[in-house]
Amino acid sequence: MAGNAFGPAADPIVIDVWSDVVCPFCYLGDAVLKQAIDEHPGRVEVRYHSFQLHPGATGPMKTADYLAGKVNLSKAQIEASHEHLSARGAEAGLDFRFDDALVANTRDAHRLIHFAKTADREHEMVLRLFRAEFTEGLDVSDHGVLADLAAEVGLERAAAAKTLAGNDFEAEFEADIAQARQLGISGVPFFVFDGKRAVSGAQPVELFRRALELSTQDRAGSPA
Image (cartoon, rainbow, N blue to C red):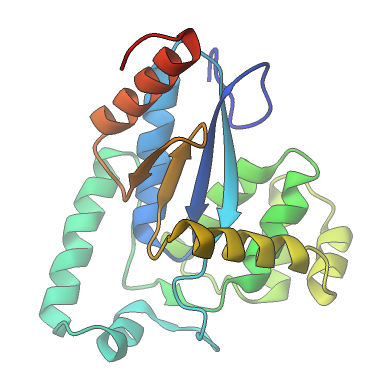
């Protein structure tokens, strides 16, 4: 994206994002944020942080079945919510296929994102995991699946598999969770602009544009 980066940049506006790869609003929020960044003339760095919507999830389960047992909504209400999300996603170029999506434990997927960050492939890994989850119906807790996805974004498969088999990046994962707790984050996506201004949820692009404008004003010493 011209003039901006989902990665390191000189004196960028820094956006810290807490998200989970089984969170459809996080996938949508990422796409809308990217649109705002693409339109912004300044430099931007996006940093991803781990969050688990379903920390107690074990084996993969169909999303609709999992939610039916966790939230006070009928099957029809869940389907209506998914239809609405699918329509919003289509507008942002996303292909949500909730009939195939699975809820699984994402701890190892988050460790893989931290691994990808060491090779400057953080955003590519996040996007690939989102697509695996919401378009392809893959189990994002399966180490073989995760290693294959890592290879697809240019990482060494064997190194990814070794990372997943051990405890690498466990401390980074736990630090993200602890920081989210300290900030009072109870839901995702959650965006923090330059450590000052927060946006919660997959908001309209105008709100992200405004947050970037205000962050630019802050740096210039202009009144908001």
